[in-house]
Each structure stands twice: as C-alpha cells, then as structure tokens.
Length: 163
Image (cartoon, rainbow, N blue to C red; front, side):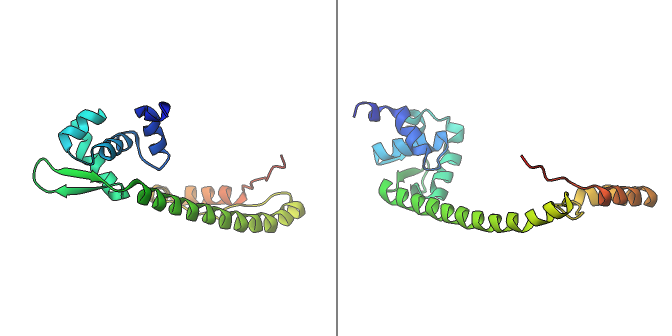
C-alpha cells in the first residue's frame, strides 16, 4: 500500500485515463483536498501558476473537475473518480469496438486488392488528387510543365511488395 501512496505512481495511473502530466497532478490534489483555490492547487501539485487555468479548463472539458466559484481566485473540485473512470472506460470500449470494425473492413479491402496484384503485379493505390497547396503551385506553372507532371504521375506505378 505504501507504493500506491507515492504521488508519482498515482499520477502515472491517472495519466492512463487520458490526462496529461499537469492535469493528473492537479486532479490528484483536487481528489485529496476536495475543493481548492487555484493558488493552493498550483503549490501542492507543483504546476506553474501560468498554466493553472488552462489545465483546469481541460480537466473540466474532460469531465474530471468542476468550477465551484466564479469569484477570484476561482475554486474547483474534483468529480468522483468512479464516475469519471466509468466514462473513460466506456469511451475506450467504444474505441476498441470501432477498431475491430475497421479491422474487418480493412481485411475485406486487402482481400479485394490481392487478386489484382497477383494478376497485374502492380497496383495503383491512389488516384491523382492534389492538395490546395499543390493546386496553387500548379496554377502558377506553365501549362506544358503541368501536363508533363500529370503524365509522369499517371505513368508511375506502385509495386506492392510481398514481404
């Protein structure tokens, strides 16, 4: 139990919930103090005063804290760890479901591309598309040069390696 009371260990565990270093430090201090003013938070969390309001705003945005007073200096308190953790875990579970769905879709794409590679040996992965910067650059070039660039890009083929 002694190791868990080490502030650095607790901060690292909180970072696993998607918090940055300063966010984790301030949230940990808020959990221990209950409610605190910005000055006390920055002193106890060893966070620069200049970063305090920015960090607290992010904690509020992420659902880890709430502002309890508008008067200067503002007062904040931590939201319950269990509720916050449940939301983070739900979000991560949805992310994993989305990854699994994407994996299934990508496997179908690869299965569809493989016969083309076996038949032709090469496969053009992307059609010629240009970014806005490329469009502006191309607009300032002479027409014959643009046509030559288009011809070279169209003729280039990307071999799919078998590794």
